[in-house]
Amino acid sequence: MTQHTLVVLRNHVTWSVDSIPSSVTYPGSLLSLSLDTVRKGINMRISTSFLCVLLVVGGVLGVEEKKVTVMKGDTVTLNPDDAEIKTGDTILWKFEGSIIGRRKSDGNVSTDVDGRFKEKLLLDKLTGSLTITDLTTDYTGLYQLEIRSTTEIFKNYKVTVNDGMKTVSVKKGDSVTLDTGLFEIKGYDLILWMSKGHVIAEINRNTNQVIFSPEEKFNGRLQREHQTGSLTIHDSRITDSGDYHLNMSCSTFTLQRTIRVTVTNGSVTGLSVTGIVLIVVVVIVVLIIIGFLVMKIKKKIKKRGAIPNPSSTELLESELMRD
Image (tube, rainbow, N blue to C red):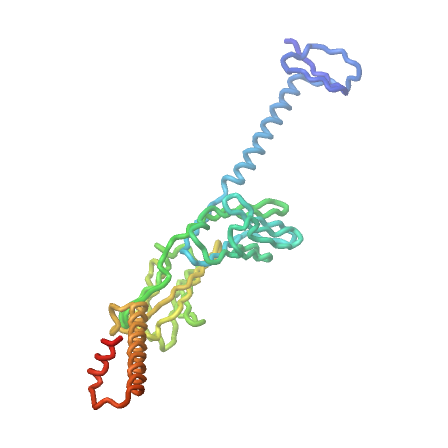
């Protein structure tokens, strides 16, 4: 069998592997290599390069996607989870492929780079967490975290923002339910319900405990829905009106929500606040008109002199007819 030889030259000369002659004489030759060795080297380089491409693509495309479901108006904090943020690391947050937050290696932080979030972003330069306030459905989409250090770390968060009722109005004595919007709470480590700065209910999955407020204000009227974590207040009272704050957290993200509760007296059933205000305004306008007419009549009486004891009804009718 004829053994082909490849001669490596100082000058740039390109040979096709199959066209390499059995012998070459060229000035400046450095060394001769077995063609079989060259073929093995070429195959090894191609295989290694292909493997590297697969590893890089797999590292980006194979990132686990965390799902986050929130409601319009909520505040959500996306956490780097178990990723350790070191001094000097570069942190990038992206939304649908566009950079929206950046912490440079020198510690300088910038947010809302493309202007879509209108000062609703907060990037914690110590933890790398990204907080988005007052969410709207426009912010539904894929959020990506990239941490550049000695190695690169990628994390994906699929955020869905749903419309939902953030105000609840009930009659005194009815039950009112504060909804988490969840089908089940297994994805959260801690759920807190708060009112006027005090925790009224705590659901801790790590300790498997549920703690209700000892305040006399609620006095056994609170009940937790086991599967969803929603909170129900039974036998509602006027004093139960106000803002209730929900805080749900896990290693991946933290969600904050405010629900406004209004407890009305049963005697005003069927009348909205707007309707009551409208009725009051109409009554005031009618009284003003009547007062104006009475003053006008009195002035005319003074000009004409005394009139023998006409009744006030007759007097008002005669003046209205003249006008």
